[in-house]
Image (cartoon, rainbow, N blue to C red; front, side, top):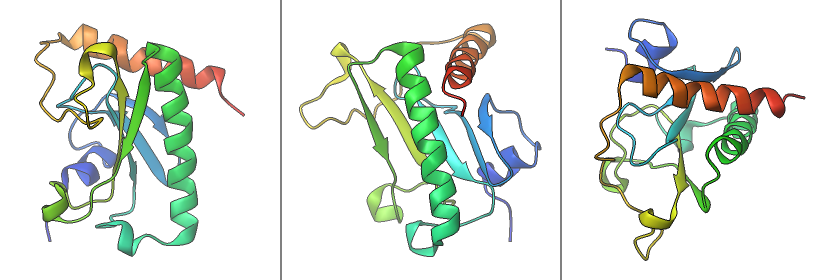
Length: 145
């Protein structure tokens, strides 16, 4: 069975703007963000969806979701924030490895439903992407236990 893109990121086979990592969880900036600050939190162990998630791993993932969400809030001061997790293709899951989207919401991104799924049209240089990553990393330092 071939690896998912998230397994390849975890194994450092492809690059990613990683913002947080433990032995069990990794978080990184979305390669195709819907807005500035869009991040993903992923268990390192391949778990297809929420139905396969065990309690121990779930607690670790949710802890990371909380930390990264607070860091995104502190780094970018959005008006709000969505945490989204999809299960199955019918629910728009496109990578079949459990992951949580952390999507900051700004004045110009509210669509009446609270979701705007079009890709952010802003073209960012590698340096700008690195700066976004570094802002979240710096905010995570402020929330360290």
